[in-house]
Image (tube, rainbow, N blue to C red; front, side, top):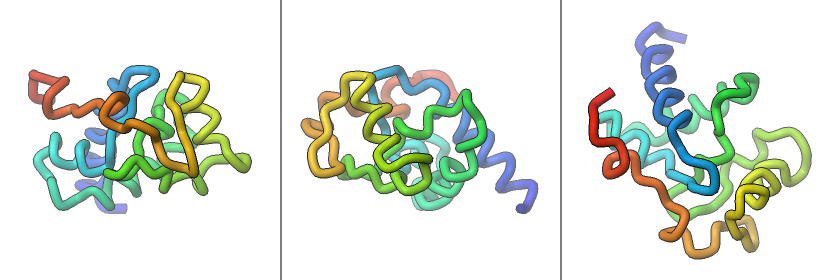
Length: 114
């Protein structure tokens, strides 16, 4: 992995650590906040690489429609869903119900630059 990717991944992790319990954000929202709006896929790679890091709540990052697209990167059959439901997020057919209720936009929520 290139050093600039490692730096980007760490910035992604800094944002992910700030997602409150019971809230979710999207890969694209994190990318936009970091000034790399077209890098949602790289945010996904960062989330995938974070599964051995207990302090990164990767389960709180979903796709823009609220689908649990990263679920196959978690141990167990429905671990991502179980973690979110344990925080009070309602999910049906692997999609967050009423996404706007749970959505946390770092661009709005985080006023200071990282």
